[in-house]
Image (cartoon, rainbow, N blue to C red; front, top):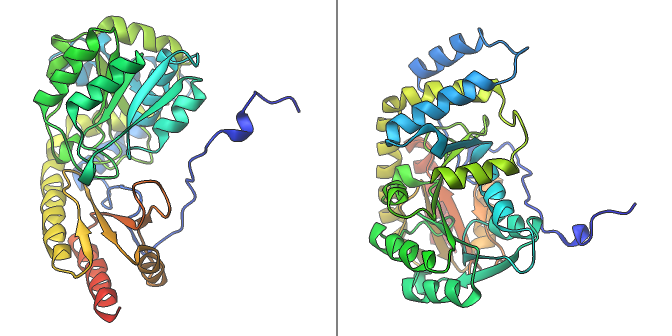
Length: 355
């Protein structure tokens, strides 16, 4: 068969999963919807007209988000998780090897894949020690490459750290001079860091992407959204297919968004658990704990692969990065319930003590 050129060399994302007893490997929320939210979602879903295209539902969610963020509805686009939104943004600014996309490394592994799929030239900016970003160096890289798009994941996945709003604004201001768009991936913004949404009013090159998958526990519904200048959303919308969102996900996301106050206690719990687990892990000999503003903690341990296998024997799933550049001997631990966290922490402590 005559497939598209270079398709065989295209990197892929391994989404295969095992049904772990304690599953903390995918940065999901380990809690179901809050009871009152679930009740309203189920009642609303029973009345969805599945024989009609999702026109009203799409616009309704868009207006809800726009009203809360004090922007116009035509500044919002909805997608199948922030992943689809990022993919479409890469497509909008890619299309040629002459078009360059700069993103940090290590960061979200799909950036490389989306850049390749968009037929753009991927430029990886290497983060500094402890995965810090040197803003002037990043700006210099973007300008030197004359990039079409610069990307920042804030807080960063899988390292967990953040950069300040002042630093993001400095990047936005400088890359605007070469007509470069700046995408801020805010998948974990509910857990820490400062949102860049306000910068959109001052810098027309700023785009913010968010998701319902993490803080709001809708990973299975696949809903995300982006906020940008209306001229930007108008162009990026051209990369979408008609009716790309389904009614069930849109209706669910709208109710969740309307009732987001119901999530505040659990978000606070996850933040406190992250802090608690970080302090506990720091007590263990040989474990380095990285600063995190997300729903997970990244650790470095000499016997990371062996520890991962040990945890899997206990039916506890964690994310190990194997030989991934800059993440060798690293494990990412997503916050589960307090009881789940206590169990995997005891297991790690036991393993470290015995080894």
